[in-house]
Image (cartoon, rainbow, N blue to C red; front, top):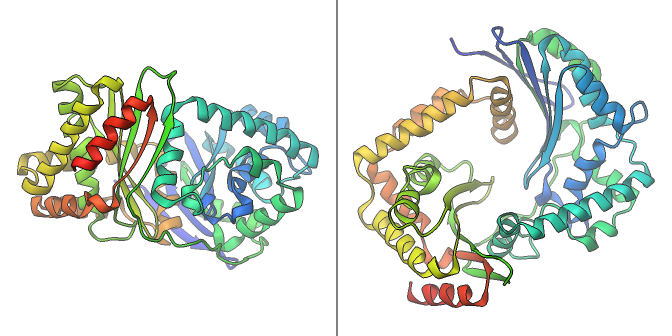
Length: 424
């Protein structure tokens, strides 16, 4: 029997979803805001991520150490994350401790102290985080490919962490203003999954959030047109070259998104995929290769990542070209498609067996679609995709005029990439 899910909307715009899982001992709670890095102005570069950090630095009634100690003394864990189009705070712990856990989460979400001294201390922490990203090619590559796709002036083309310069310019008033603008009722989603009762949860949340100002929806700059662009970072100290290939894809609400998800599975999401089997298993050219779909409300990307010896790059790119050409021209077999469907649906059903995933599903569907969507409805949409749909999706995805690349490695690898791009 599927979990019972209830939706409630508070008068101040807060959207609440509860998922009752009475057989579980735990509860997972998510507090979400629509605000992410794409909602920043130019002078706010890195602000959404910085605010996330500052919410853990204390409130008028709890110090930073109090927050972690109170959560952990309840047998629970807490964390947060910032991405391009939202920020989330999550707690997981014993179901009977829900009210106490939510009290801590609500306190940090609504009432951060934003102590000027803590702001300066946290700037140093994020300076270290920025340096760490630069030292890890796989992470730095994500920033480079975003810049190549969207351009350095667009919020989607800028790093989520910000730069040393943008970070140093933040004042307490800037942090306060962003928090007030973004953490309002109409931008907030709360999702709770586990051994809980909807009415009891609603009562707790209404008392803690009923007076949160409604505010206004936070705005962003549209994604715009994607044109071919490339970025290269020279690094002679790395033994491997790290490459990202990006192609324009559909936005989050496009009806063909299910075909694109299946195309991604077939291309490079798992160990049975064409990229993994051909480039790694059959040719032995790399250890790591995968593809991924990125979706926003107004744009999307299909991206390929690989890390390999610079000497293997030429053969790997030729192999990737053959795979993309074959998907465009010949599509996929019925057997390949059915296996991809089974993988995608099976993995989703397995993940939804725990409270954390149910909380995430409820929170994301409310955040992005303004309603809870039954996972089985999505599974039916996936089952309806045909091999003709996959072929059309491939032709739509792999357009050369939207192809962007990012490369980290020695100059010799750039020469190989340039040669491949000219020959395509």
